[in-house]
Image (cartoon, rainbow, N blue to C red; front, side, top):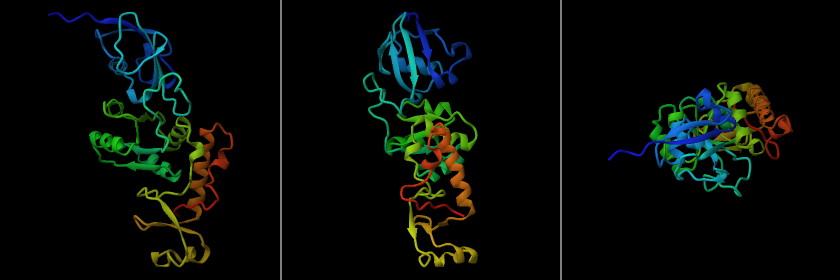
Length: 274
């Protein structure tokens, strides 16, 4: 029995979703032939857009889910993530945003992972992990996968993910903070940059056995320590450089509105490694 002929569907992709589709489909209506009875999810991923990048779909002007079947002549509008906005009156494609924000950065985003930890966000990173393991952990721990690998974000099991467009780590940090509306959630120097565990305040006596340089022991009175890996952090010159670096990213994410102030933790007490 012959299969049904493909159907003709009009697609329009909005904002950064245009980065994923062929040039001739960007920023306007384009017609595509899709398999008869294909789902919306299958169709948009065939055109190059990972489902994790999509938050809202309208078919003929009405909200649609990924599983909706397409018919000949349908018009499909596809919108990117709206983590920063309330689109519940329309239809979110995920039950709820992950407001307890945790990340899993893939192998190519190690520098971004450290910057997110600097900003206080729980961020796993494994530079040798297979895609299947990244997805398994992300789903089990409700983490947002950050990647520049489209194939990873196309995996069916993955529910929350972000394609990182920027190439430089500082720009990547600003992009993630802006896209997920996280500038106000930054808690600088509250996590270990190396192992991701939470830091805690420590006295000079408590860290005396850590082999600190004599100049540090003489000048510093405020320390933080990581109970997981044993590292000690203090407010040295590196701390000041990292604080300035983070403040610039927050300012860029917030469009320059109160950016520098947002980079200070509640109640003071910034910490960083020297």
